[in-house]
Image (cartoon, rainbow over all chains, first blue to last red; front, side, top):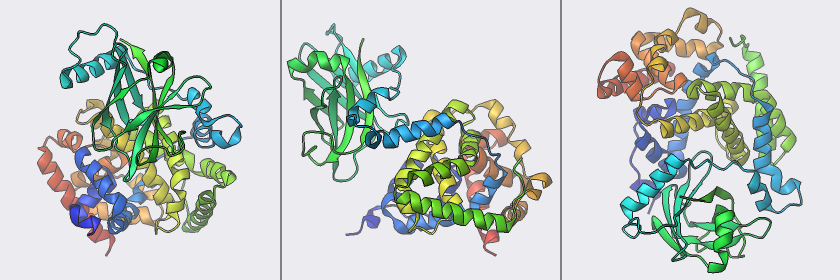
Length: 233
Length: 190
């Protein structure tokens, strides 16, 4: 069986629409997915991109701030440069700010989707775990009364034969796995060990890319894809 | 304004960037630094032109160079010319962000200056032969169609924005643009 059999055939005009950026968002996402595994499509796209790229000659060069490159190097090389543990670098990551408006929206999503949160609980904690480009976004709601951490995948799926694993990083302590998020389900409920409740509320949450079933070592082995914190609502 | 580049200069620059990418694929950080020095102003210009917001363009650019480092090993086996490969990463990052940010809203001010970006003799004059060729082919299109293609490519306009600018239904806009792209390719391959 060939992966291409299942994918839509793209005509030249559609590939061109993608190349110039005008392909509507939903089709664009599907196209990018097909592109990952279809080498013939990659090559056809390349030809279009080569055809169109001379237009870029008219784009003015604008000096980019050195701080951007510094941030790139921090992200790519911090782990090898220092003797620090990999997760200590995470603390310097800029966490996407969870505004109260966003928090209310997240809460709304859960209340809407999940009857268990019907406003009866007083202590409500929300988590927004994402990366700066929002390629992955997982929101969570933690109920300290039941120790249940209810997670919902909003954006992003694991690569084929990979899983997302959720980690809790409390200060300089080694990351603790909170569980693997099954890739075939949108929601996952993680039971939090009551001993970890306090750490959960102050620590950093991270999603890493792991082999199916989760890290074989008990520590993250793949890239950190998204981070976030819990806030009280 | 971009300064004129001769075909010879272009060829040299091309093979130098090629070499840098090959080194980056082998985790050469000095080569990565040099690539940044040589290409970041161009790629920043690309991101800024599409996103029209400095902070967002800086964030996009950061992601672009992270991707360049991580994907450098996939460059060599491809047939891409180096600048096309780099510019495509930058354009896709910027457009993905733009679409994620505003799925279908239209900023009137942004759309209005689209008309002023129609090809002008000045713009055609700055270019190397490739740009002259694509401009010549653009001129075979109806001016309004050529402007729509350029608005999409250079500014990242969506079909909705283009349709609003030209006051035609989105579907009509799409039909126009798809036809124009095919015509453009036929012309470029003549």
